[in-house]
Image (cartoon, rainbow, N blue to C red; front, side, top):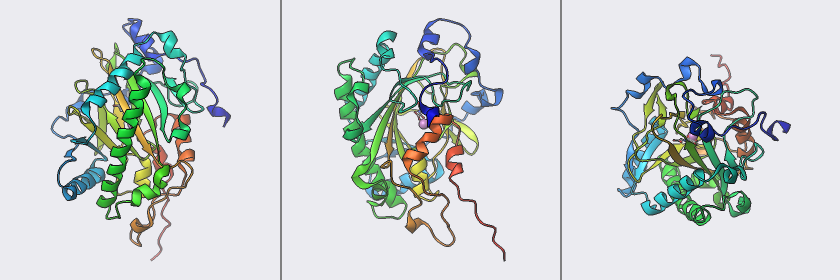
Length: 356
Ligand code: OGA
Ligand code: NI
């Protein structure tokens, strides 16, 4: 895959563009009119993704999680068991990294080979339109895939805090996997087993969206669905930005303090044979506030083919997706960048014509 060896053009840090003080953004960041965050798309303040109290009765939790995954593919959790102090520590230490001098950050510049490190684009197509955001991407689990050299050495709290954050979020994800299995009418361990049992994986993507002089013309992250299993997102309590696709409209998520935003990603849509939805989402930017978010991607073991779970395949519900390993699957977004739901659509089995 020589297309994944290096970036096709020199990398420009969005943070540098933002700090240059220019009053307009370069053409590369200007989206076509239909893809811009139009004012009508944010007027949807009456509908919102479900907020779920994880400390409620387990049967009730399984029911409400199940319906959230079917209707929205997104929900927020409160009383999730992760200490809000740790959440804040993790945010603050990563915020510290993005405010280090550029020479320090550049030491961790990433390449499209593994994407690990400090990055400013997703996709390797020459001349592609770009998003208004920088990020840091890391493998955080299993330990055999951790390369400490790729982890920033400063701030000094970053490595231990990221480690602890990973352990806590893994626990939460494995718990959610049991809840998700129950909601599909399966045994509690079923989804985890399909992920390869204890061979599951996780990556962290810390997104940094600098202030933007023309936020109406661009996006911080273009529409996409997440390729992995499930995503646990921590966002800023007071800077909105995330929008979720619902019945064709974009609904802005109203963050609840100390909560996590959970979304179903493509591999769980596949395993659930389409019952749980991996929903498109995108990020708007602001002219007055920078925004940092931490996306923890919980993934299946990367080299086993994933296909709909046999119990969810019935004569009247044939398998919707072809099997594919996650290693193979994740190459698509790494090459093409965020492209809505086109990737999971490409796995769909076209039903044979039925002759009666
Ligand atoms: C992502 C993502 C949303 C956000 O990193 O995949 O969707 O609010 N992030 O930054
Ligand atoms: Ni995403």
